[in-house]
Image (cartoon, rainbow, N blue to C red; front, side, top):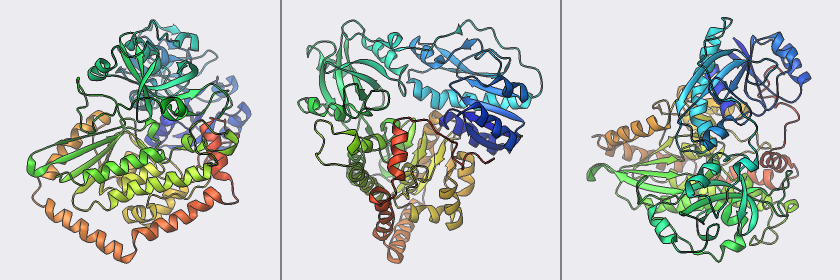
Length: 588
């Protein structure tokens, strides 16, 4: 079929549907929901047989849905209606939720149901549930709905949710003096991604994101320190806040006072320790051990976690780096680099790099860089005279350093395990490993040009052509389209697709890693890897690849063309598009 995707933005769900339906053999084009006349023009140009709306913020015009089948993807079960479906489900601790595909009508979310799919809820954030469970269910439901066209709608189970209003800050409010940790976490999880929860931190108004429970040992240590609402310690990007029954970690915030103000009057979303740099300087640091269990009383939140498993002669290392939204600041890149250097001393045969559960990595940290832009002003604790170009330059060097540690780790095999999506420099950080494994739902964006024509680094000019060939590398980076797991496996970006989701991938990856570590030819494979790296280095040193890439990046950051700085500013401040990028709007 010819399918037009109409969406407010080309988000994770839209990209997953785009790649899945393209793999199914459909012809797709994308139009951003800018204005009704723009949608009309797209229909005239593309002549779709069906329009699918995976992410909209307003009604489809009546003239449009009367003209051709328009399928709305609603992140709620049949009967649920309204713009804050998933927010309310998380807030109310629903045990089960779902996705409904329905035909557009004059009433919001009230058209005939064409397909629906359910899933069990887990105690994750709204954003995480949307990227994983909602997206997977939506792909299945959309495929079912397309198979039904033009058949009549399905018999949907009765729903008792009905219309749910837009969730407002009054509904999300927390009271440090009264609410227990579970209530606070539930409210914060229901607002994560956007818009956050308006509360106070250090006695100042801010919107809070990226909340994590403090486990037993941390709660015991916090007992008796300060009053509910007081910030008592810091770790990585986050701060520990006392509650009436323990404590919670807050990783990221948007400050409300003047300075770094965005279009909505709030500041950029930044690590709590950066947004409140002066206040955090006086806090004690409570680090978590790198090697710690994922669950249980000894588990606790931190960005990096490492474990080893397997027999002594076939040990496997597993390194997670769960950076918020996959963005890697200079500090985070340096921490990953230093951790990789430390792990060189471990007696492992394989090192698996598992990234985070929602994103493997998305490359340099654009919010952190934007905070240094001169027009944004400086925050307490920032370096006077800094600039976004300087911050970008530091960040890309730090990303390159982390990638270099992987590329030169030649005494064992390294495997990037993509439990979540990867974009830009995050894709090429993964390619610095010997192999890349992912699950069927992973989407990669192995290109930079969408961010103001960035050239990119992370040694991609070495790793990408080596995997897919020069012609395919050029097509990937110039095409600027998302690539699903099936296509990535076909063209060589992935070495294996294991399971349907992150949970299945983790089980299968551990099993295969143990088998690989115990294989009789492993020593030969490692030796061959070291020989190949030495031969490649003799032909063209890695430093030369890096120098050539950074020469182009220097022009992006410091040159006369401001495209990168403009694109970054629009991205971090969520400014709406004035037109659909032409690489998405195939019909244009």
